[in-house]
Length: 544
Image (cartoon, rainbow, N blue to C red; front, side, top):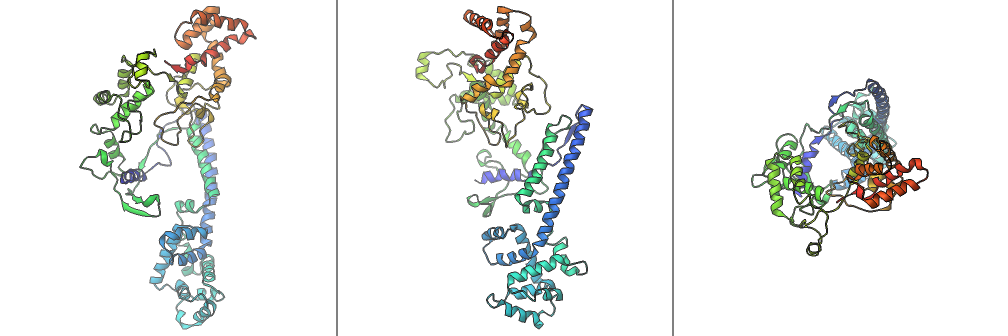
């Protein structure tokens, strides 16, 4: 458990900057100008709303001075673990309540005249409070107390009423009453809120209003074609943080402090705390250390899993005691050593695997092997793999001749644009609201870790391939490709097969395709429909 909190401390000591580092301006000057205008409009909208909400909350907290004085008094008599619950029941902020408790303690120790009356009345018995309070207020013991406070509390018949009246007096104090006014309005006042305090105190509706405007602002930065290119970075906090263990996972019940350091099982005997800033660089070096036996093996296993459909270790995210041992441990060790020797080159790793005789096997069924190893763990044949969503979509775009080879640039909402021809790796992914199209084709959930995708076969997949505007648009483009239009009849069918499947059609396929085209009405779209049939077939969607 301590290891978890050690790594948590590294990231708790880091933050994402509000303004990400600038890389370059957008190329199109018209788009740049349009972006700046829209940015200014959204920025003004955000700033105006945020200014109003911040001012409202700051004023509200000042108005609640009496409530906080009363809550601070009550909280002093309850266990610390119960304070949060008490404050929230009173619709107050627990941290501000603690702040008022500390403030009142300081005032008591300094014999402060503003709060002298409060401290005197707080000692009285609640059952006969009214009578005792009047006697105290009229007595000589409070001669040094602030006269305005004594006058304001004359009619209070309970200690809670005293707190409310005192709070009202302090809130309404004018410039001519500096001693009273400084309690609420000075820079050292417990009612003085930072921007972080304001966001914490603010109700859900107000916070969501600010966040929604910030999201729109961030969406503009991320999606507008005229937005500048910026880098995704993480910065170290000014003060690093060594976390404390949450006992039973409760943030309000903290145990021992834990230094920021690497995992015990991979650190050896000389396990030292991270010393440089947050520790992110030291952690990265520990992860990528050639002496670390885990990182490279996990990486090699993930690449193998990607190419073969199943890893040498079947549990890609678990190499521990609960995991199955590798099916080929010496092969895993060899690939790992070769991977390190070649400078952690994933390209070299993939090249070595795909040029092997194991990878180049076919899917030919051999009954004697299937009987002894039905799961094909010994790799006596190639596993048949269904293309994942990205590869499927890119393959369709490539066959139709419309795949854009542009590298970099803005993300594209492919679900809203059937004619979008960017590679699917550039598809916009909303972590909080993943489009149904992605879910239909078993896209990895972006909001959780996903060591491997699970393949499903559901009707929605077939319906998309048969009816989607995207597939229809690519079928039309395929039929209009120059090499398709340059020939006719059987030659055109052969060209379509070569483009889609990288092979010639068999005699039976040629007859069937010719009959389909001849019988299709209207004939003008016959080639488009044939192209669509080829694009959505099993041969297109699976790799043998």
